[in-house]
Length: 262
Image (cartoon, rainbow, N blue to C red; front, side, top):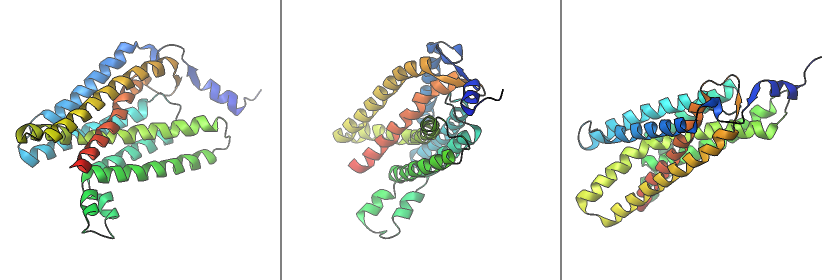
C-alpha cells in the first residue's frame, strides 16, 4: 500500500521528547560559552594599532562568523531540505557582505551623495541594516515561491516558517562583525572621558548579555521539544549555536545605535 505525502513526512522525521540527539542541556551551554569567548577574544586580541587593528580584528571576526553560518545551516534541527539550507548560507554570506562593505549605503546615496543622511548611510552599521532589510524581504518572497512550487503542499505554514527561520538565523549572525567596533568605542570612551559614550556602550553591552542569557534559557525549551529530521547531523550543536547567532542581531543594532547617536 502506497504511503501518502503526510505519512512520508512523518516517517522521515524522528519525534524527540527529550533533548535533541540525547545530549544534555549542559552541552549546549558549554558550546555557547566557547562560541562567545572565541568571538570576544577575536575582537580583543591586538593585531596592530589604530585602524589597522580594527580592520584585522574585523577580518578575523568575519571569518569566524562565516564558519558559524555554515555550521548552523547544516546542523540546525529544523525540518528544512538541502536547498533551504543552501539558501540560508547564501543569505548569511550576503549579510556578511553588507556588514563589511558600504555597498547598500552607496546604493541608497545615489540620489543625494552630499546630504547629512548620506554620510550616516555610508557607515557600515547603516549599510548593514539596509542590506538586512532587503534580504529579509527577498527571503520571504523566495521562501513563499519555494513552498508554492512543491507538488504536495502539506504543512505549508510549518515548512514556510522553518525555511524563513533558518535563513533569518544566519542573517542575524552577521551582526557579530561589529563587536570590534563596540569594544573600540569602549576604549575610546575611557581615553576621552566621554560619559555619554561610556554609558551608551555599557547599556548596549548589558543588553547583549541579557539577550544572550534569555536566549540560552529559551534554548532549553526548544531543545526539549524539537523534532529532528533523520538527515540532520549533530542537531544538538545547531540548537546550541542558535542563541549565539540570534544575539548577533543585538550586537549589530547596538553598533547602529552608536552611529545614530554619534
